[in-house]
Amino acid sequence: MSRIAEVIVLARDAEDIMKPLMQRDDSRVWTGEFTDIGHGMFGGWAIEFVRRSRWIGLLGHLESLPWPSPHTVQVLIHDEEDDCFGLWMMHDGRLVEIPLPRTRRDFWVNHYTGEVDADCPGILVRTDGPGAGPAE
Image (tube, rainbow, N blue to C red):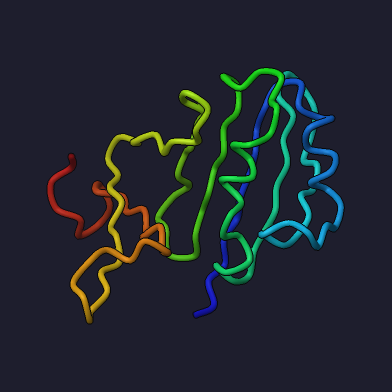
């Protein structure tokens, strides 16, 4: 399955933390390099993945970094089939998805077992779009 995903990391005073992630490193579980997308009060870095398998492990890696201001870390993820970017923020040392108004995450179910596929984050769906029914 080929799935494109875009990831943006925003964090205050994190230039030194993100610098190694802007270079190739074959020892990482995930592959690719972030690009600096601007400076200001918050630094910003972006990366695009062309296959889901390329970014498995990224959130865990980001959680493990020694962020100077962990309360400012925001990770935006847009998968190919998502209606909008999802938002993850640091809570108690973990990156946790923050529920967004008028959205829901639909998870993929393994048609053999009937259980949610743990290797797939599902898709983020807007509940207020055309044909979506009543807004949540």
